[in-house]
Image 1 (cartoon, rainbow, N blue to C red):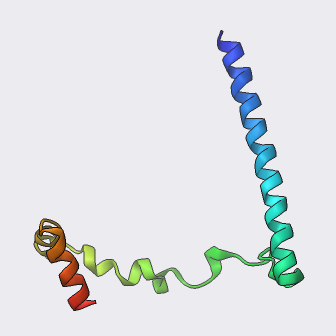
Image 2: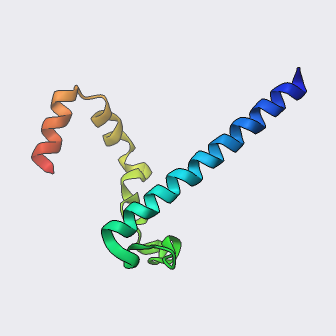
Length: 91
């Protein structure tokens, strides 16, 4: 029974890989039809787009500092309409 299950899993993974290739080819055709040959991101590297210290996840990390723990706790436990009102007022 174990070998049969392994064969079924392998067959399923192969089917998923085939479907992924098929969907990828359709997307590439759609992008090239819409944007032409310049629409490709082949040479672009997302991890080298800008320095790590300039990324948004590092700029807004002050929210998670320990000195704001009490304020975060109070805010999270406010009733939803009050939270939404504060967000609308301060945002």
